[in-house]
Figure 1: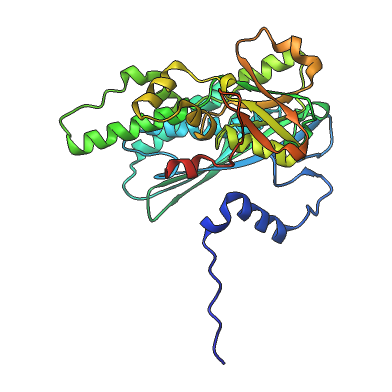
Figure 2: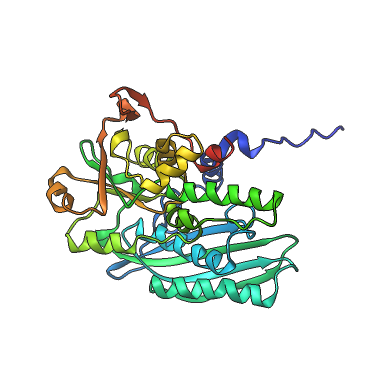
Length: 350
Ligand SMILES: [Mg+2]
């Protein structure tokens, strides 16, 4: 009998969402009745009794994919690994409690290097009020990989999913978008300059804000606190890890709604605009498709408009529409286009 060759479907053919759908099919619906929300949101949600729900999320940071040690200090890598996980808990309107840290390193990393990573981890742990409660460290054949699992909690009546957006809700965003991508572009450019001319020191001072947004992002703890203070519970929420366009499509998909976003309302920092000009690219593309901003995107009942309209921390960038309209962008010249579902990875290869 001749063995049939094993089928080989490249990951690029299905993308991250397609892969998750396939894995979800294998895993099936959650077997434990305590699981309120399994795969498909910023964190899983478990009801293990008591007034609070337990939140759980995992993120990986891989050398060469999520950070480049030639320009990213290891302390910052440690900090970022915690910040991006805390961000997923805030996206559920929750509070992070604790993390476990999995660390795999090859022999090029010294004890001092690992201490630097943990110094960053601890700095972020203090910032976000969480504890490092364990983990694992192992040798790896190449580079550095960090896997963090974060645990958080949220009061039962305060949890916010991606799936709760309603037609006519406002679409809001904290902070600004595209700056982390602008920082990435600058760091990559300076790295190339340094490679060809090691005598020239990279000059990132004029780009301090965007570079810091890339190297040391903060999770928006302050946004969750302000929303609570203002007595606002968003109808849906997600954090911006893979870009604004991907986040809006995620909420649209989970909530079975459409969305209309206004190009002129995207909060883009002047430094991001300047970098986009240097690269002869539209700043709007940085804002829509650049990843890693870790801002919070949320939808809000129109009745809550007055509560947030005075706060410069938030921008209202559009509204929720019927599912049949799809996700659309109103461009500066008032023309409407479908907002493409492309994220960080796709954009990066352009
Ligand atoms: Mg997330």
